[in-house]
Length: 183
Ligand code: SF4
Ligand code: SF4
Image (cartoon, rainbow, N blue to C red):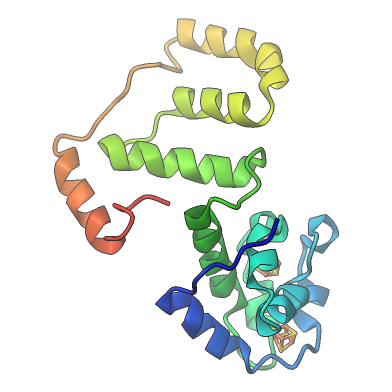
């Protein structure tokens, strides 16, 4: 199902920058992740240029991007492609249209959630939630390893927190006031 999503100011800036794209395809040719992507970086630009923003937001390609910057440094028009993909990721999470069982966005969401909550990441809880939400059957395979690590004191289910998490939240909320610093 397609829906029209409003552009934030950053996304409008991206759209302006992308107007310089000549569709030469250099970004796609140098991308090491191209074989895994449903849309190449060049096609992502084309989708946005032709007003098919929703399709770009829902693509898996933006989550396959490893931020290696090869496209950006090789673009003959100096288009900051990696940054525009980052804004697509943010917009995709905001709109809730990211692939919900795909590892990268789920990991990002959980990581930001933990940092926002207490200023610290929790390896044990993040791994647990990641497997539950993406590949629950793998949890059975890795459970014995997790339990052994807990017995050895290398993994803990304790929620750790920095001394003043509220202060960090103030900073995060100031950065992203509309969403309380969350993705
Ligand atoms: S390399 Fe630059 S100009 Fe060429 S298709 Fe990619 S973004 Fe467009
Ligand atoms: S930054 Fe992303 S899109 Fe660009 S070349 Fe690297 S993996 Fe491909």
